Image (cartoon, rainbow over all chains, first blue to last red; front, side):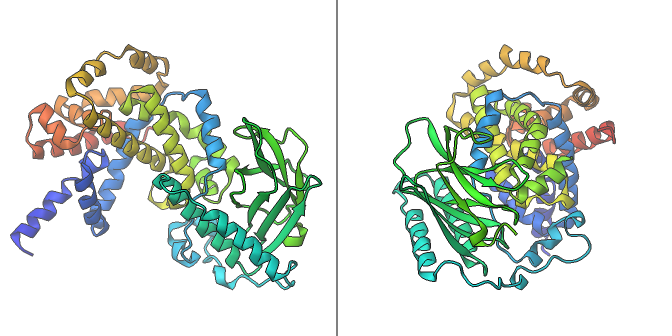
Length: 272
Length: 180
């Protein structure tokens, strides 16, 4: 290595403390992070110093405004999570032993294929998927970048549900002509839900989607905005039905009105 | 349940776990952001972004590499620093200095939430640092200055500031010891 190279490395290494304190500008931060990925000693040092810096953070704790909680929780309900679709095998080293035990996790692709035939004719499923895809890409020009990123993430989630071997479509109609459509995968515990045929709600009212389970309170799956599809995750197999209620803006913790439409999930592989 | 376990549940889409995590971390997150950003409205905005970011990217948390609290507070600090730097770039420097050191509202809040032992311990340990170590660490961490700006403000060479930061953190660690 050239003398200059040695100097550069030493120089970069001395940035560990400023890095742990977030005292690098954006360019230096990037440069140092590149260096960090190839330097185990620096990584260990940075980790230790970051813990020190966090002690400085702890001592500043202050109660946040009460309204912040509701805002954050409401935002969480309608914000899809980043999903890593890398094979589970590749992610396992990052997961703690208490999650996976000592056995490697089963690979997703080995999940047993559902034996039962598709409940709904494929054409219906395809039409529902087309509806989902169409409304997904009805993106107005000029929307903020993060909105676009959120929709891309949602598109990935939807693609993921559609690709599940046991994905099935179901449909529920309300007396008033409203309609709830679902494509769900019991093995993935996910469902894409769309609501259609409803007039716009008065200001300050929203449609909220609930998961109904035996011996448990309804669980909010989020707010339905117009006919934009909602991707619900973490559905347990015991789930019996979906219900939609009209709630005050921001949603409620528990339903406060009678459902406007309901859909049993047995037809899409749940409730076992 | 500890924040670490909760964050693992949150990564699986568990909203109840997120509510419990919120109860544990919202105070530290908000306090830290507020310490750096100072403006109450902007602090709230940044704190909300951070908590939502924790929900969105919980899957990236690796318990083998540190605690959930460190992960979230590191995220919060980074966001707060980014915000204060872009605000700083926009605001007249002198005007900002004037408001920074005469902010009774903030001092009052700081007193109100005097958070017991940990806060006192950190303060006491900060006094054990040399003046230059302390200033280098706090100007960077609590005020969001880059080490180049710190060097500028303290009229020190860059290398000296980097060393003071490292020594300051090391001495802080020794003083805080294992006392959590």
